[in-house]
Image 1 (cartoon, rainbow, N blue to C red):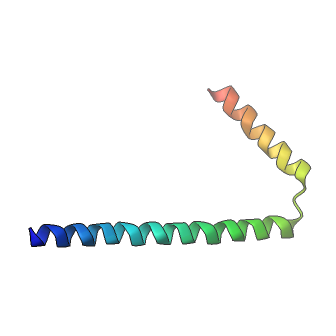
Image 2 (spheres, rainbow, N blue to C red):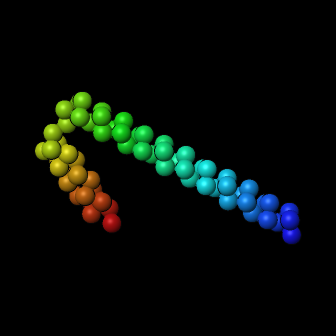
Length: 62
């Protein structure tokens, strides 16, 4: 019983640490992408055009 509880705590701790690192990494990457988009001078019209093109591509392939 003791070994089972220890194994459960180690497993849950491992998952918690991994998911925490994943959230941190995704937040850092989102910040980098936002900074790169603002520096590169992407306009709202360009973003709208890319979004429309992706939506049309998905509609065609479904």
